[in-house]
Length: 105
Image (tube, rainbow, N blue to C red):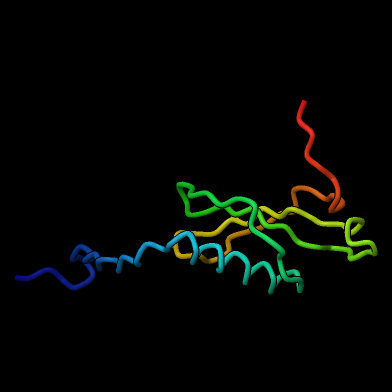
């Protein structure tokens, strides 16, 4: 007598492995998704690194435009993406004027 269907162990369906994203593709994904959330175009990517879960990117966004341009207020955002470039989260990590330099003592 054979086992009923519900008693049989579940067969694992192999997960399709997605092609590994290039750094350029991850940067584009981070820029596009943050722009959709903030409604502002990120000005630059100041950092990008692979993590165990996917990627982290640091992006710079103009939050308040002023004249002269050096008085504009920018913000750094840390964006977390999974291995396929989908946004998992973001946070603002810093605000500064464009003419402000990082000073490390």
